[in-house]
Amino acid sequence: MKKYFLSLVILFFCAILFSQKAETSVIQTSAQCNDCKERIEGKLNYTKGIKFAELDMETKKVTVKYASKKISLLKIKETIAAIGYDADEVKAKQEDILKLPKCCQPGGMEFYKD
Image 1 (cartoon, rainbow, N blue to C red):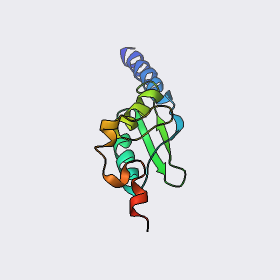
Image 2 (image 1 turned 45 degrees about the vertical axis):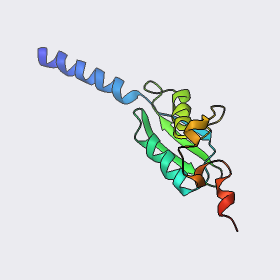
Image 3 (image 1 turned 60 degrees about the vertical axis):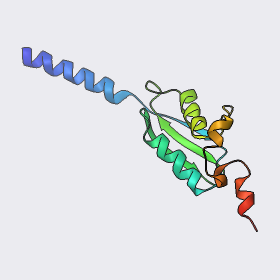
Image 4 (image 1 turned 180 degrees about the horizontal axis):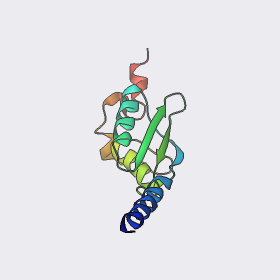
């Protein structure tokens, strides 16, 4: 009887654990180049609660799949802003922007165009 009860308890907790569905959001960023893409995806994909992040360079939008019980959408945007990029309504601080390479700063790619 104890084994049966223990099995039910384990099954119950596994069901709760695996029933947590991930949410998906799309965030407009101020990314400039592929270095920006690597920087943003690298940070987000190694952030607890985020299952997947991919930046589309044509639209500058990052698609993020995350567990809303572990991280909020606002926290994700704040993480992007802390790297130095705007994320929808959350704007990057000037000191964070200045930490980026020149090409990744706002208007930086204009310098490299002929």
